[in-house]
Amino acid sequence: MSPRAVVIYCGMLMSLSAFSVDVTLPSFPAIVEELDAPYSQVQWTITFYLFMAGVAQLLWGPLSDRVGRRPVLAAGLSIYLAGCLVSAFAPTIHLLLAGRLLQGFGGAAATVMARAVTRDLFSGQELARNLALAMAIFAVGPILAPLAGAAIAVPFGWRAIFAVLAVFALGLILSLLRLPETIRVRLPDSIRPSVLGARSVRLLAHPQSRYFLILSAVIMSSMIFILSSAPRLFDRNFGIVGTFFALMFALHGTGIIVGQTLNRRMIPRLGIVRAMRVGNLVLILSATSILVLALTGLATPWSMTAMFVLYSTSYLIVYSNASAMVLDPHGDIAGFAAAAYGFVSQIGASVIASVLILFTGDSIAAFGTTLLLICVTCFAMLAGWRVR
Figure 1 (cartoon, one colour):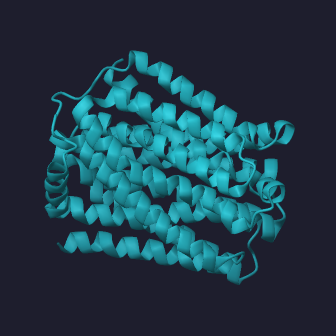
Figure 2 (cartoon, helix red, strand yellow):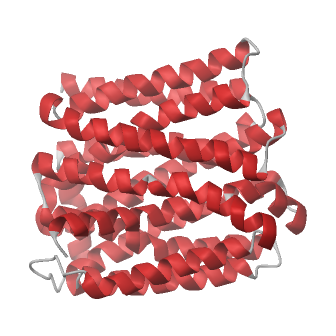
């Protein structure tokens, strides 16, 4: 594989999580009905997956520094495939959640290896630009996953969705045959507790890495909050579920592609952090508009979708650039750094989002207010970095 082809493969690895999350969204009402489960517990199929995907990165990242990126990917994707089978045959919501945890555990390898492999090959602004390219490829997930989920669930039921995810994972495993090993020097002591502790201290002691680790958790919580809340908001406020919801939600992916294309152009002109500030202003505009639409009674499925598309254009400008700011100073321990980044951002974000969805309920106004608070907090942090 050429370096560009490797980046494209990394984008596909990143899209695994998007598929795993977004493909199930149109089926939330059907899962609620068939498993006789509360809506909030079905929403937890998102946060449980992301929570475990964050925790497991602490294993996969350091392990890849020791044995290489390819063996870790093979093991992780195989475990993910097993989680798909558990989810497909789950008779209760509790076993479905267990299957999602298993998927998250294996899928974490794909997420962390995508970042580690990219860091193995690039640094500086080239790292940020190639992460943006991978994220643009990742956007195929949000576009196709809801449509695929609806297309599969309508004739075959929601359980068939997990069979398709298993096939996707199998394809990624087969593609490993062409992926070169990108780690230059293996570190045999990388999973020793003392070494992990020393590297944690190193990462957290670095002002840039520490600051953007925290920021990444704040901004990622906004997207998990949206993903977990959107099916419920569209169902309870507009009566939109299934295929129609999938069609509307798929438009969000187009926003990601537009945003990451602009991001790649802004980085050389503005720098990484200034590009993040521009993107964050767009996020604030989108969240404010959702709140205004709710308070004025003008919220419709199309106006909400338009605001979500606008939000999608800039969310990853902030999130992917934050990952570059965290990883860049630690090229010699890229696996560990990528794992720590994924752990802090996903665990922190999942905990925040899991709490928020319990309090916002069906209210679009409460949703918009909460989203705006997250965005304003993130912008204040970016402004604080300039002061530093």
